[in-house]
Image (spheres, rainbow, N blue to C red):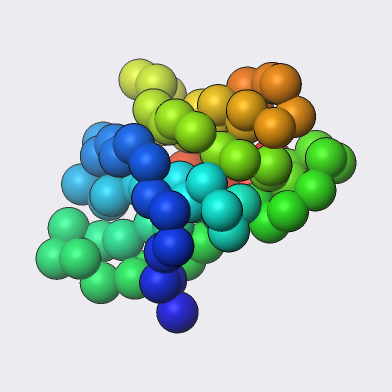
Length: 84
């Protein structure tokens, strides 16, 4: 679990978690400070919360996760728990 094939950019949230979008698998992988896999979110598709070629990622001061969803030509916003 948590194995990536095409990781792109990386960000660290306010809790110290490491977030990495995988362009080919269409998921965002979340790891703890120690590098232990915690969870993933997204999945291939065009519905809300699904991703197609997530290219970049950042977090805001409220803890939201912003993902540049390049294949769907949009930016999606998720909670710190990966909920759309």
